[in-house]
Image 1 (cartoon, one colour):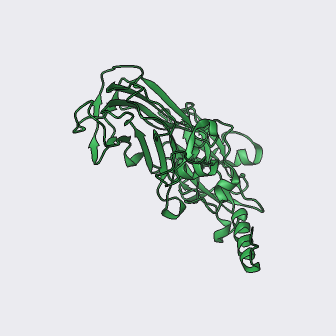
Image 2: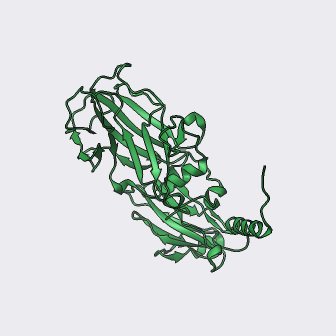
Image 3: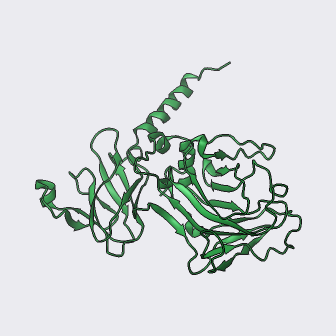
Length: 354
């Protein structure tokens, strides 16, 4: 039986809901860039009501931003570029928050950040929008281990160094890392879970990976990868999380129905909540083997505060050695759209953190 809200409680609820919905939104964006060209970018500001302004809060580390030129604003004549933008700086009024990005010949993936405001009050200021400037492959971050282990580690009971190799063995693994120095005898009974983990430098606001993919190549080098030795599913294979989400309680999702048979395999997981794509939310209950479905906003939230990535190589009840190569996150296709509620939902923490 449902209990009605007291008038005072209802008023507070409606006030909070109205405040959340009236706050402008600086949408996250992905823009594909061609080296040695200028790109006209209209920021995807969502002011809800009234006039608004955009502010570039952090500039790109590669290339430069420019205001629109007088000629283009008034007559639509080229060149587009006016004065350079030095962040933090407001985008020129009357341009519908449009700026120019000048890409160098040696362009590489970069990003800048912006906000939208409809006034000076806190409720009139958006959270920070991320604009990722990418190559046509839409890769956001990439570890290919060409020259070294790129500071990846193996976590068992303690953190251990990985081994690196430039000798191609199987499949797509040519320059790769693998678990070593495990202090246990190969093929013995496996009693400690272990996983690969990236360096903390990889963590950032990766909201633009929503509807994109997390991918990597994995192959078994030594071990018993037979049906009687492999762990049964459901069992966590890849685990993504945000420890600061939900007020510090954390939110985590995982793929739990993957079987690793030791063969060289390219794993590719689409980052949205469609049940077909396999993501399940950690219920923080060790007794539950079947985890609940997640939601698109929950995935956006986790990606926005991503600070946990675990790829479990511990796939059997004997000791194994596995190699991993070409770990990457990609942005979603051009049709990707993050719903407004994912920016304004009261449960969304951090609030599209910069």
